[in-house]
Image (cartoon, rainbow, N blue to C red; front, side, top):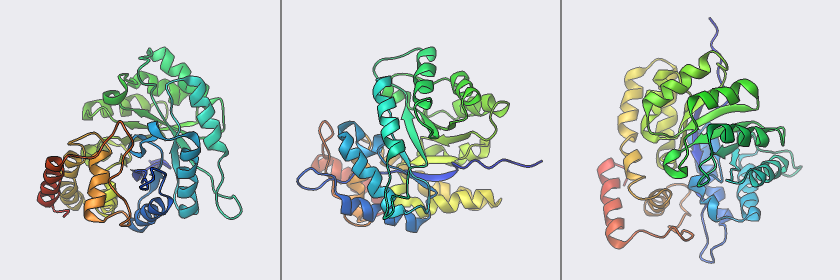
Amino acid sequence: MTTMTPKFRGIWTALVTPFTEADAVDRDALAALVRDQLDAGVHGLVPCGTTGETATLTDAEQDTVITTCLDVVAGRIPVVAGAGANDTRKAIENHRRVAALRAGPDRQYKVSGALHVTPWYNKPTQEGLYRHFRGVADSADLPIILYNVPGRTGVDLLPDTIARLAKDEPKFVAVKEATGSVQRSQEVLNKLASVRPDFAVLSGDDGHILSLLALGGDGVISVTSHLCARELVQMVKAFDEGRLAEAQRLSRLTSPLSVTMFFRSNPIPVKTALAITGRGGGQIAARFRLPLCPLSDDENTQLRKMLIADGWL
């Protein structure tokens, strides 16, 4: 029996957005971060997601982040750009804009897809979610990764709705499942098995990567990979090659970061950790846009202790 390998598999980093002292997008620091991720062997990059503080970026700044990423990547790995909104009209506008972006000397580089989160605050029904995502898909010829994170949005994209979207529209290619439940991931995989076996299921929870792979899932859109991309890439490779003990060792090594990087609201800990450790190209400062703010002195001390205990500092 031939197993279909989804295009969207492996370790994908949900990139932070570095800021300058003047509160502008720091393109140099972002480029250094992207180069660091490329060197680590990640399978894809996701700028302008939750981790990228996209809620506080203008459309022009989002375009700057995405095109900077495309320029540095230069077609070597896929780039999927966050484009979600809680107004379907705005989500469609974002989707079309992202689909039209081009970068590179001859404008030959473009995104490989868009990440669309469930509309937050509105609390739509499952039918409303279906119509929202179908409206986005119909607006441009671009693959879509669905993003389900009820802890942030207040709405849950249920397995039946994911399967319905996957069955009805081939532009839906994957889901980032961030409910924190292994059982939910199994339910999503079960629903998809008979309708779209090529549809990728990616974890949105860094602590569940290996368990999702074992269930038949495909990888992660990760926050912790800012610090441990090489180890996570090696873990997926070990799992795919049947070296389970090695995959388990690497999971044990990296999984404590999934607690450390979320002891305060993402991306505050990960951006601070990059500044403390000098990882990610060494140019990222712990700068945020309100309503996110830096850690207190006590919280910084706590983060340092956690990084030391985890072996990353």
